Image 1 (cartoon, rainbow, N blue to C red):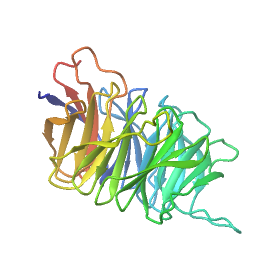
Image 2 (image 1 turned 90 degrees about the vertical axis):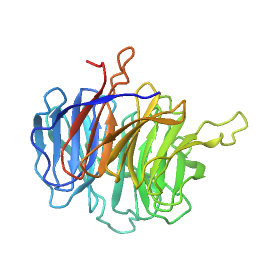
Image 3 (image 1 turned 45 degrees about the vertical axis):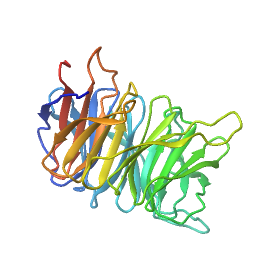
Length: 323
């Protein structure tokens, strides 16, 4: 089987440097962050910028949006974490994770993720642990818990499961750690890749996790637990076909398809059930971020997604036959 995806349009005012993160929100807007230090919100129909956050001195390296699309969490290169109200375009939380005081063992955040249930966000960085922080306005950034991985490898990426019960973290050495938030315990460790894992994405039912690595591969994991409490089958499939680092990944809202963006300047669409690539799209530069449209696709349509990367341009793509 093969699928056709058509280039719908580009953004009207590109970033002046690489786009390092992008998210298509539930309100049908798109948020992007860039190495130029700016955050932009886009209208998905026109590609026009609806808001541009004043650029930070250093680049923005991590982005997450909440399930409603009304909040965006982003993080700077040195570890300044901010929460943006996307409706008012106002920063409602700001935390300097690099600032230490007294016996504080905090570390500069690198990757951040909002808990879909609200109230907290997760961060990871140099120590290879997960830190849980408050998102409440009066205590934004205050650390609630530290979840140790047991390894001192740099935390490259973290992402909450859609049900908000777990958080996954990937390392520079190719490991994935999954933590249970209720017990604050490490429940699974996967050694799935030979090199750093750049991105993680959960299936909508929180049963599968896909990882994108510098080893040119994507790996699909079954993270369910058996009645005995032992981890499930772990890595269940490997997707190969990129000729260079895989930098980004996402799973479609119906759970059927996966996306990947690579430094080989291509985007691939994968049929998860068939374990095969069904579409390859040539881009103009390294593809640092991809994101499916959260709205479930129409009958017979594979849906739509957005991509961005090295050239600073946000691009919208739609499945052939989609409106």
